[in-house]
Image 1 (cartoon, helix red, strand yellow):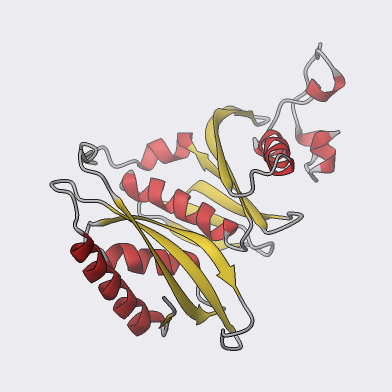
Image 2: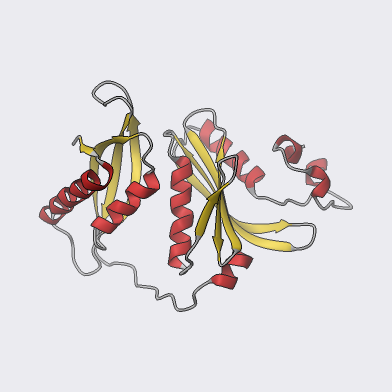
Length: 248
């Protein structure tokens, strides 16, 4: 019933001979159903901005596969781009140069050397937005760069820095995030959206984004003076590349 409600082709699923209950009749071909159910429970319990992750198996008609799946829910309209950012970070960390294409339902399909390695799908959601992502480990391991160098986690504390910018509505968070990370020259470790606003005091056709930057150095504790200089650099780069206006 859950597979049919999710719009999946029930006839293409493998069937259990002796299921414990009717809901376990079909072997799953996606982790989306269980993750979405957990996401809805979290949402009902007032957890509004979260990411669920699961490593598990799916059962296609011809083989069994191991996959990593993510379900991103947000009070903003940026869940799809956040999910894309997570997937792209994994692919980059593993040394894969991925090509991304979009199908007619807006799903992002990532390929490395012609092999599909990940998908990110926008989900219908009652409030805000949600997205589902899957990473196919079998294909990813075939194109993984084994020469990736892993670094020790920093021993020094980080700093959170908030900025607000106004950008044209057609600008994507993934591109903005990439620009900020690059401007940080290794000191900006993460960028997240904590607020999205349209309306009074924001120009027509523009969106105000509240961005939280996480700054951290591997060899020292950053000073507030360094943080402010980084803020100015980021604001300048966003202005040049996206025409962004600094709000605060």
